[in-house]
Image (cartoon, rainbow, N blue to C red; front, top):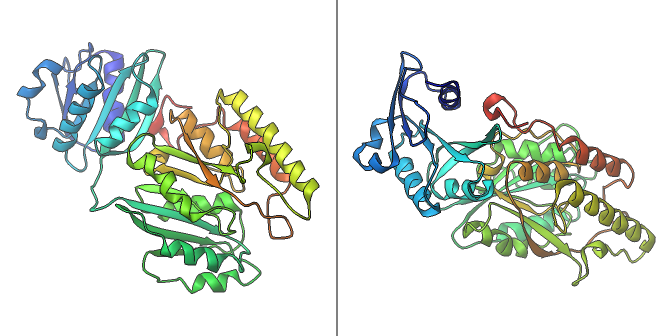
Length: 391
């Protein structure tokens, strides 16, 4: 077994967590079966033309080197492997650097009902995708994460609208993260403790929006994740348009691009009594947007929107660390680096002023955004070694 072949199989076994089993390798030019990797693992190899002669159900792990064939062939084989692998099994898909985009391949894996997706690069020649079989639900579940701090007036209105919201073909759970408000908001949130479809998480102090969302992600159960603020700036009725591209598998990651009565993206805030503040924030948005698109070679109109919707597989293993509003930058940057291309969907937006409770600090958070823009370009993507090869 060559060094590269041995490394790839070891990575697959490490990811799976299994201590013994049978490994099937499909395709590739590497000599995977020339020597046993370990005494407690058996390795068998087959080329794609002879795959139909193999009983895939006899194997615990599969390494599939997709060196040829089109997307339909790839998806057919992925579905066959998914049906055969045990629930504790794992797949490594290997593609060349000239294969379809990382985003497209991740979409095929998700459509084939794989999850826990790790993407890694091995030099300039191949990319690897590590996944596990996904447990199917009767209907996909949407988790709506709501970070709350000092929103006593708007929170009950928002929750009333949210709990009335239905989306055909989807179940919805609401995860409310309350950060020890000082204005009585916690009392309002406590009214929903034990409410069907609502999970409440109470923090001992306000660590920030990013910290609250990260805590919510740890307890969310959904196949799809959506962020929702409690301040009524965003319209819950926009959920349908945001989720539709995900349900059709057109993309795995959607951004709700803010619009204000059809205005251009750099004029989305209008405060009747603070026009100069609105102008300052709009100019800052335009400058950060231009810088973001330049650094990350994008043409997005609103990567900083709160309305972020994505499949759970997108963030598996990601190392998220931001505590404040810089979580918006960190999440988009790391999903871009993981290979996902976001689709922007226009949404309604009515900005509130500082007198109405806006919490972004013009200088402190601006510096955090700038730091995030630079830091997360090369910061580690994954929380552990499962993502080896991806910085």
